[in-house]
Length: 362
Image 1 (cartoon, rainbow, N blue to C red):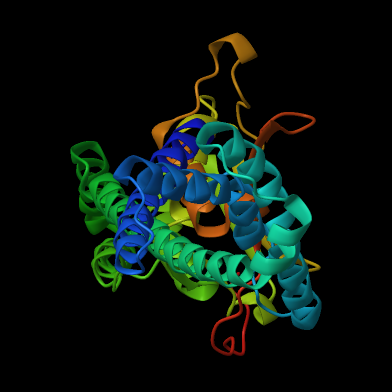
Image 2: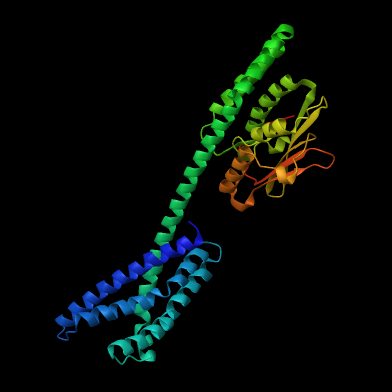
């Protein structure tokens, strides 16, 4: 929900809330006055009740800001509690600065500001405190719903990522070319053909084995990537060279599931030189303070002219997943490499998983 829509929703919700409370207060005042032998008209009772609660409601934006911007959590919890108490106590001043002139003008009463503030400060404090507690409950419900919606969206995107990865692997052209390469190898190198068939099987198995997690260990992503690269190297021979350079200490890091293989696939699809020149692809991972930096670089054709460049669906989907998983802390950058080629850089907050294996991927 955008800011304007959220403001309209808040105005409608809290306007209705204070109107209902004001009407109930007016009905109660009408009944109490009659029972005490000092009857008042229903119009006066309802009017003063609405005016009383509407003047309280004018402070709602301040309370919403307080609940959303200064939640009662550590650190500095005592200072935050004190801030709430001070604001709630002094909220009696603007409330009666609005209510008293209107009440006296509309209903001909003779309320005085100083005496009313002194007499009513405790009651207003309790009333506003109850409202802040209600705001807290509603705000946490809103946050819970937003997180539930985000989790649903992430699950859907992960499912699309799995389907996209599987679709890429069993795409007719990919499958035909892979099987054709296997068939050719069978004539001259049965062992190589068998390895290629095993790698194809590994890719399908690793894709289908994902348990729905949004993140995976880096070493798991590299296993998927190496199976893909072995197939591509067998297909393109000397035209494609690839190197995975990741320190063993980083293999336990958590990364988005199915993030590396689509990046490299994009490089192979768009960066492979049409000539016989070898296209070198280098995949690296490095820790920079509290960030993990993944890079896929090649010396291929590079990006098309800016006017002709259109980011593909694969990169666009990865951007969306990064935003929902890590917010503004993550980024994906695509740039030309000096001397020719392209580099894709993904930066994500470090999330260390289980202990890394003893040896690095290469």
